Amino acid sequence: MTDTLSSAVTLNKFEKLKAEKDGLAVKAELDHFAQIGWEAMDETDRDHRLKWLGVFFRPVTPGRFMLRMRLPNGIITSAQTRILAEIVQRYGEEGYADITTRQNFQLRGIRIEDVPDIFNRFENAGLTSVQSGMDNVRNITGSPVAGIDGDELFDTRELAIQVQDMITNHGQGNPEFTNLPRKFNIAIAGCRDNSVHAEINDIAFVPAYQNSVFGFNVLVGGFFSAKRCEAAVPMDVWVTPDDVVGMCESILTVYRNHGLRANRQKSRLMWLIDEWGIEKFRSEVEQHIGHSLQRAALKDEILWDKRDHIGVYAQKQPGLNYVGLHVPVGRLFAQDLFDLARLAEVYGSGEIRLTVEQNFIVPNVPDSRLSALLDEAIVERFSHQPNNLSRALVSCTGSQFCNFALIETKNRAVALIKELEAELSCDRPVRIHWTGCPNSCGQPQVADIGLMGTKVRKDGRTLEGVDLYMGGTVGKDAHLGTCVRKGIPCEDLKPILRDILVEQFGAHLKAEMPIAQ
Ligand code: SRM
Ligand code: SF4
Image 1: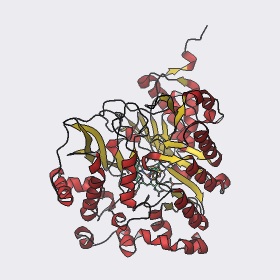
Image 2 (image 1 turned 45 degrees about the vertical axis):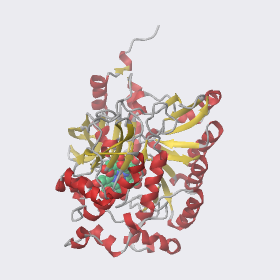
Image 3 (image 1 turned 90 degrees about the vertical axis):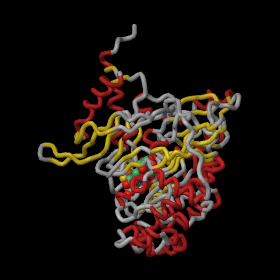
């Protein structure tokens, strides 16, 4: 196929399995898998290739798969949400939908017997989960208030769809991009607050004007991994919105053809950029595109702090509002999804948006319907005015379902924040991100306080613990936080966090607060 691919001397396990059979090939075998059941399936197909269809075998819950969707720009309709609700409802207590850190849904409890039927329903509803795992491009993120934010510079919705359609062949699967050296992330920012975390994507498009013409500066190579975490670097290229899809296609082709494949810990795009230097990288992309690229605009338009979109905000359309509701660590049950779909239909336009903070937004709510929406029972569960500590809590999946996890995350994160909220009051949100292992899916490096799962020894026992990250800043001048303290047993974490919140984030101990007369 390509120079680097064919000349790899010894293929690692994953390169081998891709070379033997493209991941997408299992699409034709789904009925067969459904018939024979998960225990009889070929293990490589089951544990790895199914991820090309977004179906993840979970060794922690064998027989209960996870299904990772693709929702470009994090947008889903109420009708589609109802379909997801019906799918997870079938699985009773084992069925959930988690909002992910890429503005996306993952469904849980899925049985392989049901996957052909689920995929038929997806097809009819315009949904897809194709190419959402393994060495594929992940969900394309975009500004969650695209098209409704009065201050936006560009509506990213259509571009996110176009990029996804190019990569997935309109959801049918595209063998051109099913054998990348590694996973790949793309984000398109259209507002001034960098609500997509541009800096942690392999390609990020950041709004920038060139001679008064709107376009994007291109950043490349941002990624987190257990071995290394890097913020994206400027490619020194500026493109117009019309060039975005072609730019993604060319970078992906260069990466596919030349990306490093020998060591999976050194295969993300940044490793190729390191090896070549940014000049050569840009010139290879130019060669593929067939013309030289315009140099980056001198400055970009990311000028604000990052917004979390929780609360009620007027839209650019007069008389309409968007309402951002907080979902504790992104977890929703079937009934929540049904309620959410109803909320969007009754009060909005039947649309729901997800954010990278694992929350949702109901757009297009008329002024006259606002107070009725806020009186709905679901808004007690998913608040538009959450406590400042819960408000910015994010957590990856953790050991409940993820076999990489070194600790339990979601339930622990919620329990601990409730305890801290009982003792503290804080005037501003503090971004606390939990991640169960160094893979960093919960992005502790972009948090005020990041907690990364680890194992610790205490009194001769091995316990679940965390490494503490601090200093991540987001929005304008974003930069990554770093590890400031290692190996804190989770059982000792609460007083440490309490002190940090009081000393560094201005929280007050409730007991010490003046009592209102
Ligand atoms: Fe992730 C692997 C969950 C966002 C870096 N990630 C995994 C797997 C698939 C591992 C597995 O097979 O169990 C996890 C699935 C667990 C499960 O059952 O849910 C998993 N990652 C997640 C999600 C669900 C976390 C969440 O709770 O929100 C996020 C899904 C996003 C999506 O919709 O596609 C998720 N993962 C991220 C992010 C954040 C981001 O994209 O902004 C990162 C860091 C950014 C990056 O990729 O550069 C991330 N995940 C990883 C890595 C490390 C990649 C590397 O280059 O080494 C792995 C491990 C791997 O790929 O080998 C990984
Ligand atoms: Fe799993 Fe680790 Fe990612 Fe959490 S950070 S979802 S534990 S791979």
